[in-house]
Image 1 (cartoon, rainbow, N blue to C red):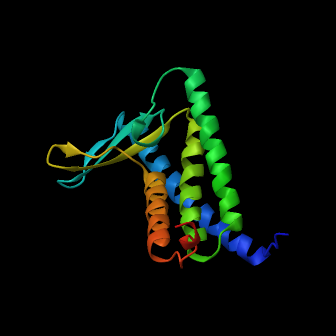
Image 2 (image 1 turned 90 degrees about the vertical axis):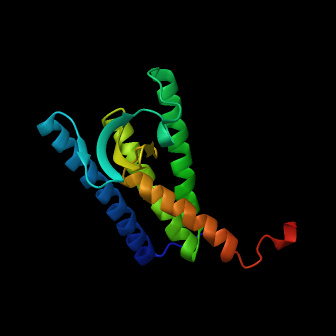
Amino acid sequence: MLKINLKSVLVNSIVILIIFLADRISKIYILKLAEIEKSVDIYLTSYLNLYLIWNKGIAFGLFSVDDNTIYNLISLIIIIITSAILIMIIKAKSFKKYCLMLIFGGSIGNLFDRFYYTAVPDFIDFHINNYHWFVFNVADIFITLGVLCLICAEIFFNNGENEKFI
């Protein structure tokens, strides 16, 4: 049976809430700026711009369509994956738990937008010369960091758990 440590649950919830709020605050700022200026197209440096777009698809705008059925199906799949990540957080230990919390916090940030705005505002445009990366947001940064940290944890800190399968 799973033992619940209330202190751990509280700390984990606060970490996830901070990630969610960092994402929300950044998006609210950009959306308020877009409301005032009628658009957001700000050149910060020679490699970083703020440029607001609305993403109805998944990561990097994949599967972005105007069909409500497909949009709802994608949203349902995201809810299922996010729920699975929550279960993994509950079962995980140490470093992997925090990696999953980064992913979960970013995921609920983008999921909130999917239901509140029916699209996710992306606004960070990283580029080198004329080669642009996909436009993304703060939630995407947390999701990406979580995934990269999980990969590193599996490669460097696995402690031979999977050796019995080789």
